[in-house]
Length: 255
Ligand SMILES: C[S@@+](CC[C@H](N)C(=O)[O-])C[C@H]1O[C@@H](n2cnc3c(N)ncnc32)[C@H](O)[C@@H]1O
Image (cartoon, rainbow, N blue to C red; front, side, top):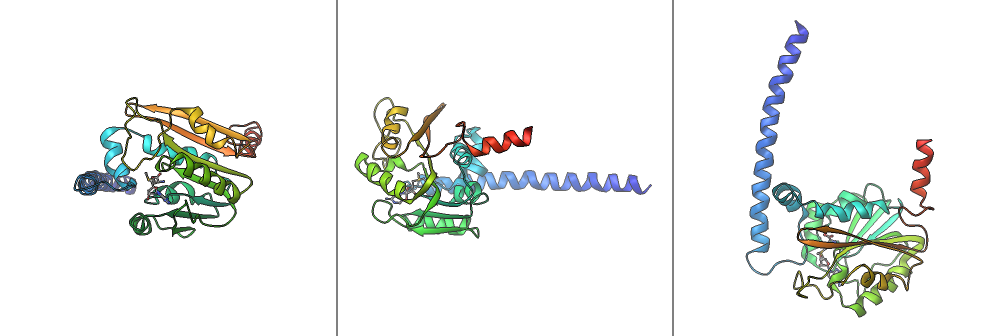
């Protein structure tokens, strides 16, 4: 008898909470659709994106998982130490991809509005959000990882070359730079007006990395609306190299 009551109780609660979750999901989705409209279609668009809009509205609505890739590919290169994220925007990736498996995350951006949003929505104990223009005042320190996601295209080729040198001087000897950018459109127009330089192809991006790093890997993914480039660069091993320590660990676990 006790078992039957338990089963009925579980079914009733599951039905109530399932319905509640369904309604909450729909409400969150429509609220984020309105938020996106207010942020992107009432005046000039911001230089950064609130990724909670991707999470709650755009991803389920479009089935486009592109926005997740940079966090996933960047995470493959994590070394578990101190991480510097350049041009962090809303801080979603600092919290949700990089903070759990890094000792500290210093996430910087030159836009006070991006940082205000990051602190409001993506604060977590080992992440510090710092105001800094990376052309002139990149945060000082020694970092095991530097992440430069969706921002390298916001700089001119000259600026990119100088910023690369600053990154290199902040990385530990086997530290890894990782990041994401996109390939230019065929008609030569830019995806966003804030973009200074969009890359022709894998080789065009690799030429900025090779002067500073012994190992450079650039790879691409192609979505219906965007051709993407991801990069890992280091003087040590990068993910999937023979000497990549995480690979050795997983081999040991498997044997
Ligand atoms: C498209 S957002 C990318 C944000 C985040 N990295 C991501 O993957 O979603 C580009 C960011 O670069 C920042 N940015 C542009 N120029 C910068 C500079 N000179 N110094 C620091 N941040 C800069 C912008 O404020 C913006 O937040």
